Image (cartoon, rainbow, N blue to C red):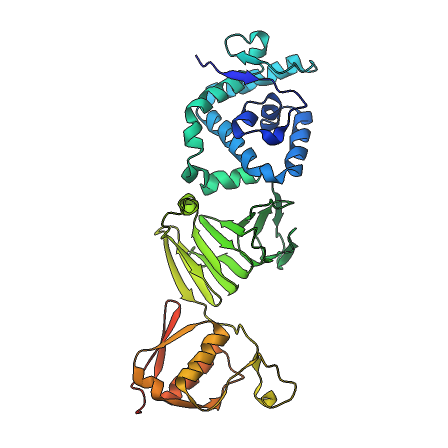
Amino acid sequence: MLVALIYIQSPRMDYTLYAPEDFAANESYLRYYFKLDPVDVFFWQNWISNHPEKLDVIMSADQLISFAALQLPEEEYQQEMERLHRAINTHEGEAPQEEAPLTATKQGRLIRLFALAVITIGIVLTAILFLYNKEYYSNRNTRQLLATQYLQEKKNNGTQALTIQLEDSSTVILEAGAKLLYPPHFKSGKREVYLEGEAFFDVSHDADRPFYVYYNNLVTHVLGTSFRIKTNPKKQVEVTVHSGKVEVYEQVTASRKRERTNVSNGVILTPNQKVIYSEDSRQFEALLVEDPLPLLPVMPADSLHSAGSVAAAASFVFNRAPLPEVLHTFEQVYGIEIEVENERINNCHFSGDISDMDFNARMEVICQVLHAAYEIRGTKIIIRGSGCPE
């Protein structure tokens, strides 16, 4: 037989001081959790909405209750739920008592009201270490399931992209069929959202509140940047970075990251890079995007000598420029590392106007002139050829 302490909380209790186990043992909160009393449901929904900084504690409390309920055989669980419903109907309207500890063996007529709570607390006492195992807590299904109780949901049921403006001025563009879960107010330490489907994020910079996107088994962590998340035709997850820096790692490694231990199963991406993640193999493959975009403005050829030309703009008009100078321009404009396989290639010079071309066309022209070729290896470009004499 389970013996546990249960406290009947006064309405004047300061719930901001509650730990997860306090919520899990609270009569009113249990009625809210099991949706047994509309008054309690209304109260706790409003309280949680007004205290977004307590979301993690609330989610932990729900984890305690959920874990306890899962330990019961289905038949016994249903019996306890029916008994609890009957007890609440029987005692409805009774005045709340003052705070006082009661044991499960001395509750008298309140035992029916708290039958499920006693079971919950008894199991919680033996499961408390399991609850705080961060590997378990970071499990994506558990975290996302709990998150749905407190976050707003926006789903794009149309055929056109849907733009969402978040509280911090970040913008999310949901593609058709995509769904986003997000809080009405971000808490002080971090900004967290949950995504299903494809979306483009333009995140406002906030060094004190990193931005986290939970997608399937991945966490995408940024400070302020723009990137796209989607599932490709092979059912692999792709994260493509347009600006800034993005860290992508598995949710199962999140606790080890917080503990500052080595996290090898993840990547850091910069603009014009993407990562492909396969859940089956749990492998990350960092690559260049198919069509890299300029990170700096490119000066048109006809404005090269105009008085109004922008000083920060890059020029792709070259006149017998040493190849290292040409490649440096590429690296500055696109943020892509370019290496030569043969040092003699650096002896070559290039002349030409490639201002009105995209990245791939520019590389093709240069390699044709040098009688060379290039290949993409991961996030780098390697130029191969015999080179030029000194």
